[in-house]
Length: 180
Image 1 (cartoon, rainbow, N blue to C red):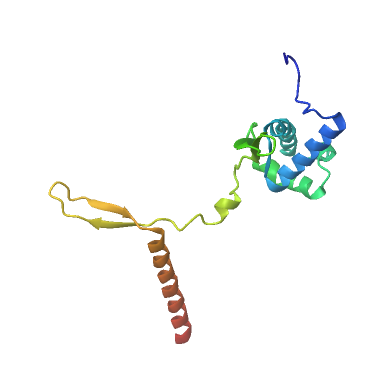
Image 2 (image 1 turned 180 degrees about the vertical axis):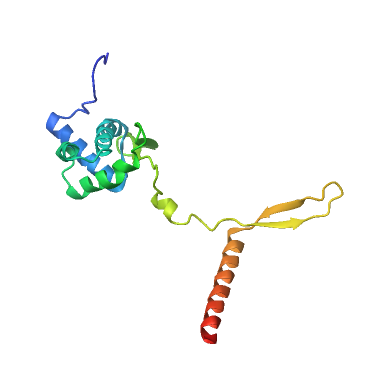
Protein backbone atom coordinates (compact mmCIF):
# COMPACT_ATOMS: atom_id res chain seq x y z
CA UNK A 1 0.00 0.00 0.00
CA UNK A 2 1.03 3.55 -0.58
CA UNK A 3 0.20 5.13 2.79
CA UNK A 4 1.86 8.37 3.87
CA UNK A 5 3.98 8.75 0.77
CA UNK A 6 4.12 12.47 0.05
CA UNK A 7 4.94 12.51 -3.64
CA UNK A 8 5.64 10.39 -6.69
CA UNK A 9 9.35 9.70 -7.15
CA UNK A 10 8.74 8.90 -10.84
CA UNK A 11 11.43 6.23 -10.69
CA UNK A 12 14.15 8.88 -10.69
CA UNK A 13 17.04 9.77 -8.42
CA UNK A 14 16.59 12.93 -6.37
CA UNK A 15 18.83 15.15 -8.48
CA UNK A 16 17.25 14.00 -11.74
CA UNK A 17 13.74 14.48 -10.33
CA UNK A 18 14.55 18.03 -9.12
CA UNK A 19 15.99 18.90 -12.53
CA UNK A 20 12.89 17.54 -14.21
CA UNK A 21 10.64 19.69 -12.00
CA UNK A 22 12.74 22.81 -12.65
CA UNK A 23 12.83 22.29 -16.41
CA UNK A 24 9.15 21.47 -16.77
CA UNK A 25 8.10 24.37 -14.54
CA UNK A 26 10.25 26.75 -16.60
CA UNK A 27 8.72 25.41 -19.83
CA UNK A 28 5.21 25.73 -18.43
CA UNK A 29 5.77 29.35 -17.46
CA UNK A 30 7.36 30.10 -20.85
CA UNK A 31 4.69 28.49 -23.06
CA UNK A 32 1.81 28.34 -20.54
CA UNK A 33 1.00 24.86 -21.86
CA UNK A 34 3.06 21.66 -22.09
CA UNK A 35 2.36 18.10 -23.19
CA UNK A 36 3.71 15.33 -20.98
CA UNK A 37 2.72 12.09 -19.25
CA UNK A 38 0.05 12.10 -16.59
CA UNK A 39 2.38 11.09 -13.75
CA UNK A 40 4.88 13.85 -14.55
CA UNK A 41 2.14 16.44 -14.96
CA UNK A 42 0.64 15.66 -11.57
CA UNK A 43 4.06 15.77 -9.93
CA UNK A 44 5.11 19.02 -11.59
CA UNK A 45 1.75 20.62 -10.87
CA UNK A 46 2.53 20.63 -7.14
CA UNK A 47 5.79 22.48 -7.74
CA UNK A 48 4.23 24.97 -10.17
CA UNK A 49 1.33 25.84 -7.89
CA UNK A 50 3.71 26.56 -5.01
CA UNK A 51 5.81 28.83 -7.23
CA UNK A 52 2.76 30.76 -8.45
CA UNK A 53 1.58 31.23 -4.87
CA UNK A 54 4.99 32.74 -4.05
CA UNK A 55 4.84 34.93 -7.16
CA UNK A 56 1.55 36.51 -6.11
CA UNK A 57 3.53 38.72 -3.68
CA UNK A 58 6.48 40.40 -5.38
CA UNK A 59 9.21 40.75 -2.78
CA UNK A 60 12.96 40.18 -2.79
CA UNK A 61 12.57 37.19 -0.47
CA UNK A 62 9.98 35.50 -2.71
CA UNK A 63 12.03 36.21 -5.84
CA UNK A 64 15.09 34.56 -4.30
CA UNK A 65 13.15 31.49 -3.21
CA UNK A 66 11.55 31.09 -6.65
CA UNK A 67 14.90 31.77 -8.37
CA UNK A 68 16.22 28.56 -6.78
CA UNK A 69 13.74 26.64 -8.95
CA UNK A 70 13.63 28.90 -12.02
CA UNK A 71 17.07 29.64 -13.44
CA UNK A 72 15.95 31.78 -16.39
CA UNK A 73 15.79 35.48 -15.44
CA UNK A 74 13.35 36.27 -18.23
CA UNK A 75 10.89 33.60 -17.07
CA UNK A 76 11.36 34.69 -13.46
CA UNK A 77 10.41 38.24 -14.42
CA UNK A 78 7.40 36.99 -16.37
CA UNK A 79 6.30 34.93 -13.39
CA UNK A 80 6.35 37.90 -11.02
CA UNK A 81 5.05 40.58 -13.41
CA UNK A 82 2.49 38.67 -15.45
CA UNK A 83 1.55 35.27 -14.08
CA UNK A 84 1.57 36.01 -10.32
CA UNK A 85 -0.65 39.11 -10.49
CA UNK A 86 -3.02 37.31 -12.85
CA UNK A 87 -3.93 34.91 -10.02
CA UNK A 88 -3.82 37.41 -7.14
CA UNK A 89 -7.46 36.87 -6.21
CA UNK A 90 -7.47 33.11 -6.83
CA UNK A 91 -6.84 30.94 -3.74
CA UNK A 92 -5.32 28.04 -5.68
CA UNK A 93 -5.90 25.75 -8.64
CA UNK A 94 -3.78 27.65 -11.15
CA UNK A 95 -3.29 24.71 -13.50
CA UNK A 96 -5.48 22.34 -15.48
CA UNK A 97 -4.76 18.81 -16.74
CA UNK A 98 -6.45 17.80 -20.01
CA UNK A 99 -6.24 14.18 -21.14
CA UNK A 100 -4.96 13.53 -24.67
CA UNK A 101 -4.89 9.76 -24.92
CA UNK A 102 -2.26 7.08 -25.04
CA UNK A 103 1.21 7.57 -26.50
CA UNK A 104 1.93 5.30 -29.45
CA UNK A 105 5.36 4.00 -28.45
CA UNK A 106 4.83 2.87 -24.86
CA UNK A 107 1.09 3.46 -24.27
CA UNK A 108 1.78 6.03 -21.57
CA UNK A 109 -1.18 8.29 -20.83
CA UNK A 110 -0.42 11.75 -22.18
CA UNK A 111 -1.95 14.98 -20.96
CA UNK A 112 -1.71 18.72 -21.47
CA UNK A 113 -0.71 20.70 -18.39
CA UNK A 114 -1.73 24.32 -18.80
CA UNK A 115 -2.23 27.45 -16.78
CA UNK A 116 -5.85 28.37 -16.18
CA UNK A 117 -6.64 31.62 -18.00
CA UNK A 118 -7.91 34.20 -15.55
CA UNK A 119 -7.93 37.90 -16.18
CA UNK A 120 -6.07 37.48 -19.44
CA UNK A 121 -7.21 36.71 -22.93
CA UNK A 122 -5.54 33.68 -24.38
CA UNK A 123 -3.76 33.66 -27.70
CA UNK A 124 -6.76 32.03 -29.32
CA UNK A 125 -9.07 34.70 -27.96
CA UNK A 126 -6.79 37.51 -29.15
CA UNK A 127 -7.22 36.34 -32.70
CA UNK A 128 -10.77 36.94 -33.72
CA UNK A 129 -12.25 33.46 -33.65
CA UNK A 130 -14.35 33.92 -36.75
CA UNK A 131 -16.46 36.71 -37.97
CA UNK A 132 -19.43 36.96 -35.67
CA UNK A 133 -22.51 35.42 -37.13
CA UNK A 134 -24.90 38.18 -37.93
CA UNK A 135 -28.53 37.32 -37.89
CA UNK A 136 -30.75 38.30 -40.76
CA UNK A 137 -34.35 38.77 -39.82
CA UNK A 138 -36.88 37.69 -42.36
CA UNK A 139 -40.56 37.76 -41.80
CA UNK A 140 -42.96 35.13 -42.91
CA UNK A 141 -46.66 35.63 -42.92
CA UNK A 142 -47.91 32.53 -41.23
CA UNK A 143 -51.54 32.10 -40.36
CA UNK A 144 -50.58 31.10 -36.82
CA UNK A 145 -47.74 33.53 -36.09
CA UNK A 146 -46.77 36.98 -37.25
CA UNK A 147 -43.38 36.80 -35.52
CA UNK A 148 -40.15 37.31 -37.46
CA UNK A 149 -38.12 34.20 -38.24
CA UNK A 150 -34.44 34.49 -37.31
CA UNK A 151 -31.94 32.84 -39.65
CA UNK A 152 -28.19 32.80 -39.22
CA UNK A 153 -26.10 33.94 -42.14
CA UNK A 154 -23.41 31.59 -43.39
CA UNK A 155 -19.79 32.58 -42.66
CA UNK A 156 -19.22 33.28 -46.38
CA UNK A 157 -22.16 35.71 -46.46
CA UNK A 158 -20.90 37.44 -43.32
CA UNK A 159 -17.42 37.85 -44.84
CA UNK A 160 -18.89 39.28 -48.06
CA UNK A 161 -20.95 41.79 -46.07
CA UNK A 162 -17.96 42.86 -43.96
CA UNK A 163 -15.74 43.18 -47.05
CA UNK A 164 -18.28 45.38 -48.82
CA UNK A 165 -18.71 47.48 -45.68
CA UNK A 166 -14.94 47.92 -45.41
CA UNK A 167 -14.69 48.88 -49.09
CA UNK A 168 -17.46 51.45 -48.63
CA UNK A 169 -15.63 52.95 -45.64
CA UNK A 170 -12.40 53.15 -47.65
CA UNK A 171 -14.16 54.81 -50.58
CA UNK A 172 -15.86 57.30 -48.23
CA UNK A 173 -12.50 58.15 -46.64
CA UNK A 174 -10.86 58.68 -50.02
CA UNK A 175 -13.75 60.84 -51.25
CA UNK A 176 -13.49 62.99 -48.12
CA UNK A 177 -9.77 63.50 -48.73
CA UNK A 178 -10.41 64.51 -52.34
CA UNK A 179 -12.95 67.13 -51.26
CA UNK A 180 -10.46 68.76 -48.88
